[in-house]
Image (cartoon, rainbow, N blue to C red; front, side, top):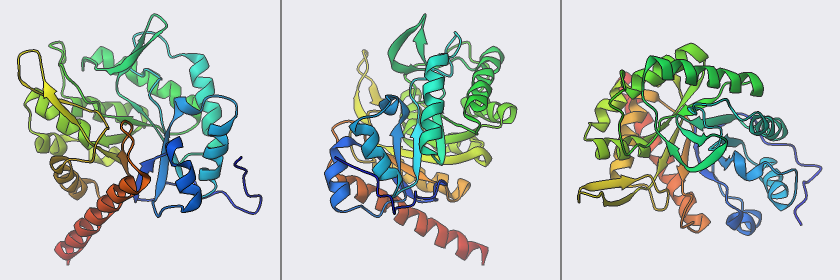
Length: 296
């Protein structure tokens, strides 16, 4: 049984501008035997909404040693109905308990008439949608007593009703609510390839002044019903070369922010994930040296 060390002070709350990895129960023994040199860990909020038990003992052990970020997947920020008050109360209790440096959610919806769907579904980018999502974001921030980050989605279809670009929508959302943004570069690349737009142009248009975190992940490649190339944001493989390249391009615009390596399916050995985090940190060091040389 894991127990907190009474002599161990809890790690700093703030998330350093380093690479972090997702915390998985499969890593418990390896982490206890040899805690890795990573900047921070992230957990999905919905996996820790119970009152106690082994998951919380493990998470508390990790939280004593590392900064923590919490990533939500169930708030349905873009849902047509009201936010689930019970879910929001559980989330608030979790945030109070672990004092994460960051909390983030998706620009998506996943509920309808009280039923939870197993997908994060896209939104039409209209003035009405913006007002609705902004109200939900403000409600969450008020409940948690903190800024939250909103993540750009990976999408597989587009709405004809959209009246503004996704980057414009996110910019206006942050201006209205004071929320930050989570720039997921795998989502950018997946959406760009699926819809035929330029990923670099998307990054150039992105409101980087609001970016507080970035995500990197692997995608799955398949075909759509017409035989065309289709990318899926699968989080089941190493970060692809094209996404690493996009990360370098984005970093030159955002400067140093915390970066997460996401790998949620076909879980690799811990050492593989730590290796990916080290690669992200090495790339940021190269970019920082280049920026410093340019300034000189």
